[in-house]
Image 1 (cartoon, one colour):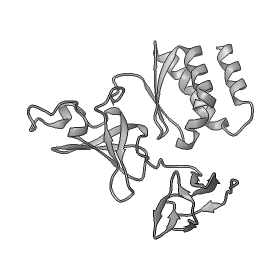
Image 2 (cartoon, rainbow, N blue to C red):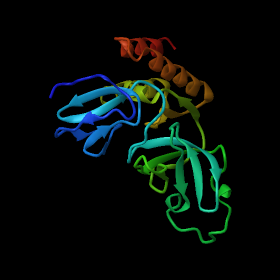
Image 3 (cartoon, one colour):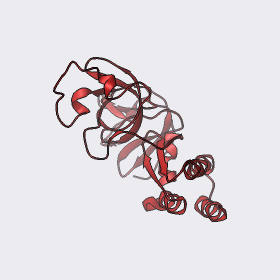
Length: 223
């Protein structure tokens, strides 16, 4: 089936008719719905809704960058730039169980701390559940936090990572990219991190303009 795009509103039914649900949609009563405002995109019999702008809708397996907003006896609340506040359970934060379960969790992660996490579960009926007890996830110790519109993340990465690798190589920085539009930039100094942030914001502004990679390359060469 060829691609078809039309405006979709939350609660507006999309006739299923043998189509498979994709991104930003869910099935109820034999019909497909979207929890967000976006454009209907049908390709190869898979229904997706492309967000027009705004919030991040979690998907299981996504890498996200979150900010701790609260904690209780057994869990943390985490802002992931979504309409749904995420939860990080203590059991999903440590590779081994705590030897003293009564230790206040803010000794490990406190309000305002930044984490790189994986979306462990989410079904639109309950809060997204996160995990950081795998390699490559956990508390962010240093770097500059940058935020862009989540739908612009694929453009920042580029085809096969071409654009993001260009930025990293030219500025000698490393980056952790969250699907929720947050990026951690780690460089040899603050100047390199701020230059990378400037480039990232330009990519966000000009993502729709042809020739972006060439312009970014020229900008990097002039620095």
